[in-house]
Image (cartoon, rainbow, N blue to C red; front, side, top):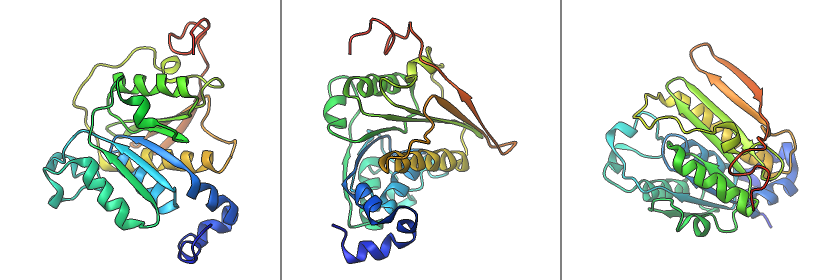
Length: 244
């Protein structure tokens, strides 16, 4: 049940989906891969929305070059583990939720344990090999995956429902080259908030998601476009003949 202070905190959003919807958010558990440019706004907005439990995984430490976009990390946190820095801020912003952060590299050996029984996996990463690993875990476990990516003024979002939609490897069959890419904080904020919005919608049981659609954001022209995507029968992750 909601505490009285929670009813007060969430009063404006409960005008949209009622106390029953807020209870659904309180019971939810979300795993966020990455506590950087995307992970920070995603985690922040899920925390203030009242998601009951947030799991975070990030191996890196805070660097001054992060501070133009990673809004949970501040000047005083330079040299601190991002997982610990983010965990502390989220607990402060909403003491009524549970936050568990893991300062670790996501790999084949631990991805299943990290995701656990989460209701949702959120990709807030900056590299495709680990994204593909999350995609495979989502397909194995049947847990939906929210993908987001950014570069410069551009970003992208899609929602992957295992067994029903194109998976990440259907949409991006080849990983782009690894690079230190340019990025501005506003792009991370916009894409991260869209991912958080998708997460809330999914947890509330809404059907109007970015499933089988890839949303593209162009910050220079200030335009959003969506493109239909489809499952590929020959996809090595979810295609015909692939064992679950």
